[in-house]
Image (cartoon, rainbow, N blue to C red):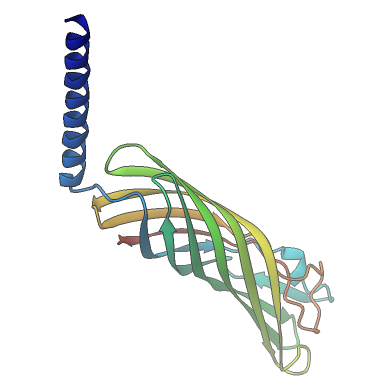
Length: 229
């Protein structure tokens, strides 16, 4: 009798556990924010890049020359896509147009002048760690590699500064970032990111007419939308 009672109790416990599991699954599936652990996603955002150039690379040290670096920040955008393997881990590929910054030159009393432009961009491949706070809000960290490109061009009066010259620098760097997602529903989220791309370009600590790009340290802050599939 005791054995029969034990078996009945065991069956009751199993049935109750199964019922709770099914109820939890049904509740999760009916949530407007729930999504399977593994899914693809695509996103894009607009933002602001701070280039943080090495000022010494652009200084014209000749007598009477003045160098003015325009704002080292610029409007930028990014696009990315990835695969979320689990609730906490994923990987994504992204491209960022990191904007540009200008440097203006003049030599007093001569009318000599020139201007350089540096355009920055990057591809990145990174792992993403996600920490859900609740069903709407989560935090994430980004760590991976970035392929940076700096395109430098210069135009001048042709006498005191070269008429035109340019060069391109590339770099492969670690990239890291932090961000947050706010789920509008299970398929759409607002995403905020800060991502640092390291450095790109040649450090010269002096303006030269050879078209050296100069060194910059771009970082992007952006906000945009992410679609989940």
